[in-house]
Structure formats: structure tokens, C-alpha cells
Image (tube, rainbow, N blue to C red; front, side, top):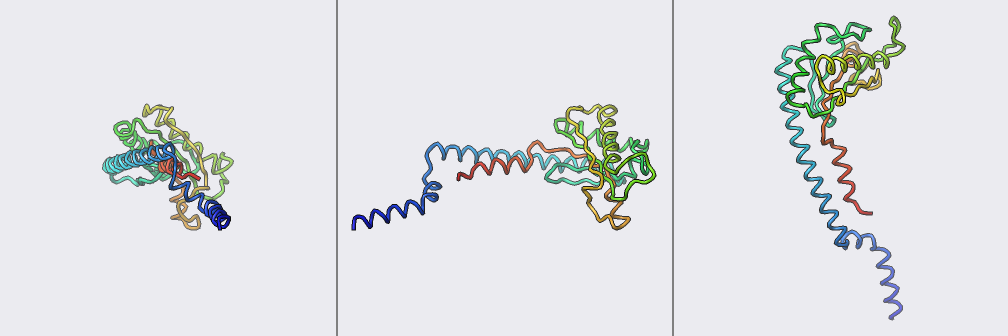
Length: 214
């Protein structure tokens, strides 16, 4: 009888060990989980406040750019300012049109006033129509050149901190609409100026993951 009780105890420990680990943690483990939970709560509050600030900037930009065809969206990756390529450039060109200067100037003013501490990403995008009559070898090169020229305007003319600016050209590889229609291709030809968050959702999720103890 004693042997049977002993073997039952061994089986119980083997099958419930993981569960016991979860519920009977050491004081050190419990302290660590409490600290991580507090950090998640702190970062979540900061992220919520930052999102509120982005919404305020969105309102400011909408007021400043009234009548201009500029897209404004608060997303997980930040405040996304979308400028159609025909606002900034002539077809197949990367030189910024003078008509676009006032629009970029208004964006710069809001960034300086409300987001001087934020990093800024400049992204170039195109449709999927291959380049035929141009000096550019591919849509990616054209989109990169356009993003770089917007960067130079923000840094040199707008006096934004170059260390806080990054650029990338995606070409046709990140469409937001169907390239099978004229309207869709027009939407895909764009430059996005993204005011990046200091407290991104991914960073908070990574802290949350540390709460799981295997």
C-alpha cells in the first residue's frame, strides 16, 4: 500500500509539475512578474498618450492642409502623411515640384511644433507598371530617389534634424490598392512621411512576452 501511494505521488508530480511551477513561483519570480506587469502598464499609458498626441497633430495637419489631397492616418506605425506622387513630382521624375513646397512647409511646421522629438521615416512607393521611357532602371530606384529628395527638403530647407530622418524606396512592393485599375495605380504612386512612435506596439508586446515563464 505504501509503495502504491509512493508511485501515485511520483505520477502526480510528473503530470502537474508545470502547473505547480506557474502557481508556486519563488518570491524572486513573483517580483520579476510584478515588475514586468508594471512596465507593461506604464508603456501602455505612454502609448495611449502618444496616440492622443498623434490625433491632435492629425487635426492640425488637416486644418493646415485643407483643400489639399493629402492622406492622414494614425496607425500602429505612427502618424502617416500620404502625398500622391502627382502632388510632388512630374511623371517619371524625382525632382520636387515648386507647387509642392508650401505643402511640405506646412508639414514641417507641425513637426517642429508638435513632434520635434520624434523620428521621421520617408517612404517612396510606385505602381507596378515597368519603367520604359526614363533614366531610372526600376521603380525601386525611382521611389528611392523621390524619398531621398523629400528627405533633403525636410533636412536642408526645413532644418529638421537629419539624425532623426530615414528614407527607403519600396517601389511597387507595398501597394495599398489594386494595380489593375487606373485609380488603384494612382493611389499606389505616393510618398509617405511617417512620424514614428517612441512607444510602438511591438515594444510593449515584447515586454508582455517576458511575463510568460516556461
